[in-house]
Image (tube, rainbow, N blue to C red; front, top):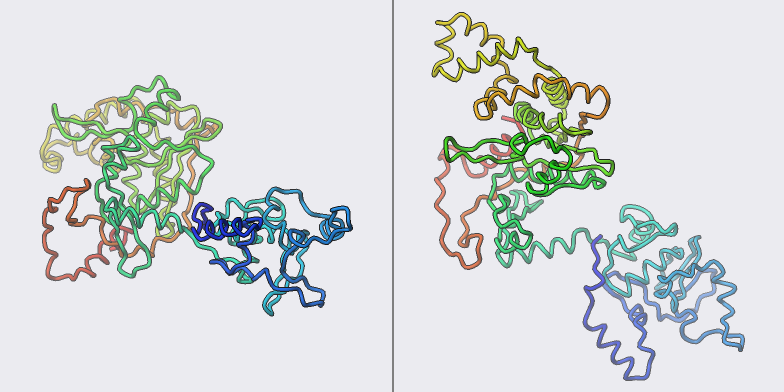
Length: 490
């Protein structure tokens, strides 16, 4: 339910002005006498029924029933349980129920049941036309939930309408019209994705060089949606959005850990080598008690990518006083949860003895100096035995890191600190299943498009032409194939 009190009808101002000109009170509650977008009942009908039900009409705000001293006797009899709540200002002139128990109200030959909190909701919506459900309260002063409570009762009676995501949809439509965002639709037209790309918007949040400006493939777009859902799933956490924020936070939480030991990958070789911190860009957060939560969103069943993530974060986990490694899965790969948990525990708890580290270092040195490991296995019996022992997913991933970072990668695999943290409970490994479905994005067209304008307004240079698709597959078949690949199916 997405309401905005500022989204008013300019005709309300005209009606208000004309009321003052006629010498009236100019009360904006008079606008409730009109049918509006929410189909409120007509409240100007005369009360010509006497069947035990209440007819909507003017309450004590107009021709008040007074006992001569200016006191309304109905305040004593009918409103004995009325809350002196500021929100009651909207129902002051309406003959609607005020009590906790629901009462019958007749209008236009129909019968409704309302209670005091529902009367306030109707009056508030009628006054502002559009109201956020977060600004409304039920009879126990709790925020209204569109799926239950008073709003559900009002919806079932046809008294209010609920619009989900109205402001957000209008906002992104405006971005698309101004060419600040690219719209990506699905083949069955059940969903749309927006890629916000305009440089001025990123510059406004001090991220002019953010990689989120670049177009991405369909799989990467779904990965980003899952990460966002993972963040929304745990709103009690405080998240770090940029690399600078993460570096500054860990400088406080783990001051002995140098910047070079933070999770990273090296891009390029020689003098042109560039180090990228937190390369997976997975959510990192902290609880109110200071526990660090590292989230990994497994959009596909690739355990080796996850293994690399765990290894890169091992030095960081060793330096933190309390941490949680939280893995989120979509429903399509729920069967891989056990494999991911086993890989995480093996990487973090299986420490290597000093003599084994010596053997592993020797093997890595020989492996780096040969161009054909398979041929060397036939020539060198010792190398063949070492290769048989260390040619596993864990050590293959460790070798890639050793090739760029050197012997420092052996510190985490030889230290029992992480295993001890898991045993004490200061370290945790958790798995959660995202109940949301992403099948409505299947198959999703890629966000990579040949636009006539670039990311800067006024840039009219055309995008480079894309190679034609293979003649054996139609465009629809290619998109379907890419989708199945993105969810780990062939």
